[in-house]
Image (cartoon, rainbow, N blue to C red; front, side):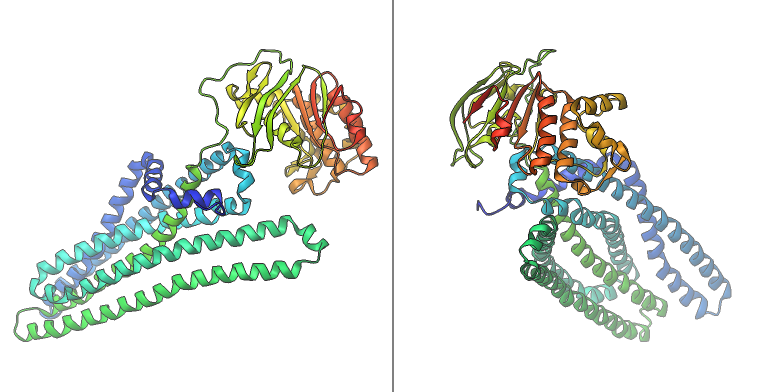
Length: 559
């Protein structure tokens, strides 16, 4: 398997298609009573359509040719009743299928998002968020089309096609055998179309994902693009990716452009055959005029379903490609697994952290840490310093159990982190990263993110003790000030202060600061340093430092 493939691409290529179908069916199955009602409605809709040419046959042979107005009136009334039945059953089936489809896609999005929350940091290190957005958006839209439209199209077309063949054989098996001579070429053409369209729509889904990935990267890195005047390069690269997407779509359209007109041509040939041989039958009094008229109508019931089936194959290929990619994500297991029987932590956590002969590498073939041992007593303040790439942040991430060591163990109060539930670990160990990440919402909501059950008074007290209350109160709406995506309305220092308040409110036994002041100017850094000093008092702390001012208050400095 190529190392250049993303995690998603690797799973998409190796996972069997049957797994996707069985997974989707298991999600839809609980709504089986409504599926039955929708199917019955579609059957009645098909029967109402199949009956109409028979009514026309009767009206022509017994009404118009015999000048019998009673037969014509009865035929008209039956036609009206069939129209009402068709309206009611079509409305019912459309609503039910759409409701079932939308409910399935809603549940699938929740399942996919929940699964993505469970995946480990190693997955996000290798996977681009634009590709994940494609799974949540473009692929689920394709699934909606498949369920809402393709199910109705397939069921109705199959019923019309099967019912039409049976009725034609009953009306005149000789004429039916002659007319159905066009069916074998239809079957061959459909099989060939299905084979080519499957590959074409797989390529379309991949190219759409590439477009979304590039757009997401470009927008996220717009400051760098502007700083280095690389707009032209970005546009050129986007043009190449967009052109590949354009070519993939054209290949898919080209296949359909050959197939669908061929179906239309065969339809004309079929009707011509009926008129020729049926006309000869009329002259010999073997087939009635009404029967020929019915045959012409029923031929459209053969070719129209075939055309709809070709459209179904389009939707099916797109929907299956999307389903494969979504369930490809769902088959990925977290690299960091929850223990089957977690060991409980004591009510009061001392915060004793120990690394025992830990070896670890993001790529197992290239270890970053080699048999590192470290013992940090509860309540001790540690500064980790060293050159870039020495493994400081890696040690911090192992303490958070974002990753598991390749060899050795990381322990909290003597318990291997692999034996703890993630909920217990996250309550006891909290990290403040280099960049203060804020979510869209208010300042209060961002602080509560670390402890959702905290009261408003507890939020105020935590911020006062930390020394950030005055800063927050000075904002336009105070704690209710809205921040946009990633807190772009605040400066780097202000975002970091809110991040510290969030961690402080969580009140962990162990606090890890991963270069929390590295991107700040000296003035802002002093403000954040003061807040950090209050925050670290009385708890175990590991500070990944790059400045002496950060390390000078530590009990121990580890190089």
